[in-house]
Length: 189
Ligand code: SF4
Image 1 (spheres, helix red, strand yellow):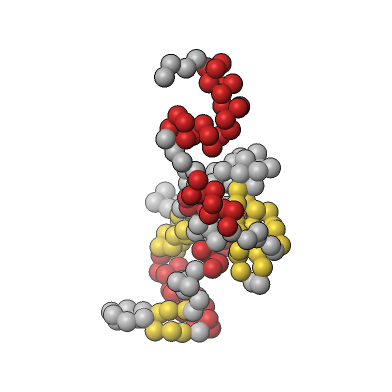
Image 2: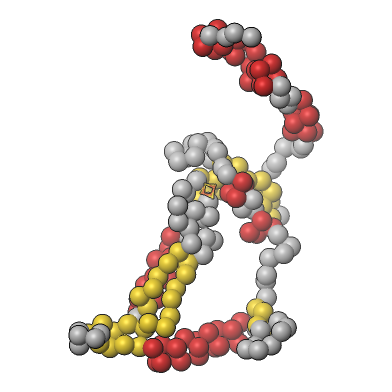
């Protein structure tokens, strides 16, 4: 079928998006529409937020009810994504809802093959001990030319995508106060 741009647009207006997809691309939205209309409306508290997974920073609308995330969509008013989201962002509710989420401290001792459940006091104490030990062993007051540097070369800091701006700020301040010079974050595009 030969089609000019103007007549294509005229036809598009008349047919609507769904009819257009079916006519020109052979895509039938019937099943998707039936599924969408069979679902009950989602009710709950809607909160705006920013996707933490990458530095694009898409805006989202999160609906919560009964302590659970019951719906999550792109925010149509957000200038970055205008309601669109990638598959990673669309799966964000799993951060809260997933039954595979680790909710307890798990510790595997050096050389051991099994994880043990521990409490938070054990974890915090162990982390503090290891950080102090590593910092003491690797701290450099001066570089090769004798200049004062005060840096802990044996410790690095890696931020995770579920951290927000304020948490990243606090972590970087803490890391620098320890003398850490290797700061990185995985959310880079
Ligand atoms: S991970 Fe996807 S949804 Fe999230 S900010 Fe990046 S592009 Fe947007």
